[in-house]
Image (tube, rainbow, N blue to C red; front, side, top):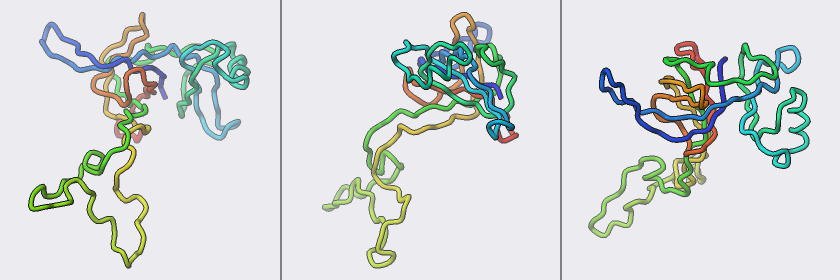
Length: 210
């Protein structure tokens, strides 16, 4: 499993001078992410590689994390992320954008943009009610269940509530290009999360249930 942790910088366009084609890409500042732990089936019950991202002063992390990172002589980092599966990563060495190549299929995970409290029309794409003849049901959700039976509202009912701010994974993306000098990864298409949001980039094995 190839993976890396990064920060979403935003979107831009890349132009191909030969074909004149415009490609929308998301720019991700990915890594370098030092490998701080390798988990195995024998010791942990599953295989995974743990990466660190976003170096910070020692005062900004807990003593427990400092002790964990010192096992591999790694400086304090804000984020620790696991990537499950077998990996060729070496303990203590950094993972850079060079693990990916242009054309690789990837999936990106991040926290979607929070939109606050929203009604059912915005949150669940409900249709509105009539706006004339004294209607009082213009943007209301409508019936959420009968009164006598079952005398309660079922769990999971689509209603108004907080929208966004959830962990989401965008699949079917492609690596357009990489800039190893500036640790930049250009991914074709949009990825979840706001600008400067933390994202996880994994390889996607299409058709294999990655």
